[in-house]
Image (cartoon, rainbow, N blue to C red):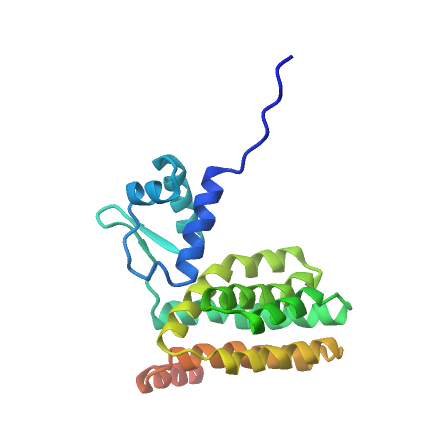
Length: 224
């Protein structure tokens, strides 16, 4: 009788997670070329799973595929950062408000916050912070809302990685995280949502401040 082979993890998924981790922890920087043959050698696989992984990462907005320049890590500029964070501002506080109002467990958020506080390096802290935010919005009771936020999660993490590399602000954000969680655990849905909105908005404004001309354009648009 022939034995059934034990399933092995997808090589594509293995490569995908490996490249993503390197991008989101700053080991691969915006604009850096991603060469299939080099990545295949580093991960010990053929070029096929690397190619498939890069296609998936292009779909999530972490890498850019160009016919002439090849594949590169996505560049982060003020427009890209504000676009991603605008989506978060619109959706994430509402998701948290719903999670608190339905009495959802926030144990995962508390655990992630503890891991972030105890982190020994930037990569570990960054990943814990990502899990903290996801643990706040995921139990909102609307799976579609959670998936929509998941879609911009990697791009938001890329923005954060670039901003932190230029100006680390871990301690300030850790304090804001603790206050958001305190309000949520106290059952203050509106207060937690406001604190989260302020947290997200202030981060992108600090990291990518608007120029005077940009502010004027926005004001004129608001008056139209």
